Image (cartoon, rainbow, N blue to C red; front, side, top):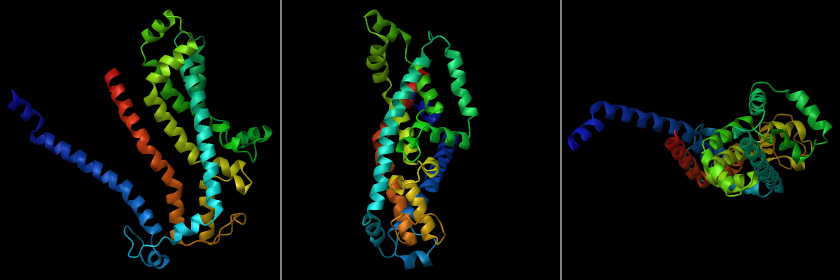
Length: 295
């Protein structure tokens, strides 16, 4: 019996398939990792080495001048602070609105549930467009306000549908038992649904956090005050100035930086999300396991 199992799982075809999968995953990992290592290595390289080498993983001479230059100006800290405020506030508000809406639309006894679901899906296919959205934000008095980076994208229809489907996978018997014990709808939501939905909440929170941290287009459209620029807009200005192009970068308190400074700014802008991801990764695995058991 054991020999049959060994033959079944270790046949030549199985080994070939496993080898192909492992090779493909390694190739895909290298495709994602090598550009990042190039940026990291270039941020520690000297301008002379960057000028002579087009691809750098390990620089011949390490230097921290680019990071010293970035951290010596308050502009980068100001932009990071704006991005942190937008990310933390926006993620919290988006999760509250998304969770409330997803829970309501996941209940089969909600009147008009199909109509509301259709309206949500409709927004994924059709939108007002850039100009009507700008007019709406302007009419609400949100120009040059940090709220203009949060409220227009407070609820993502895609994220709401994911969370709604997760709520629908929770057995109705749990809700019925809680209500038989005298629990209200709010009590069911906070005491039953949310504790069982931590994998979904962590995953959607990361989606929102990455989206808010990478806010770029909304800041270009709605923010004119350079003191309220998020880190991504400052990165754009530094890239434009360092490229020698004429742009509206006079309000940025920097001088034209070297290529290594641009790479260092990219690392500074990317590092917070890289640090936060490992703490949420376990919920991705747990969510996949829960879905496989239920499915």
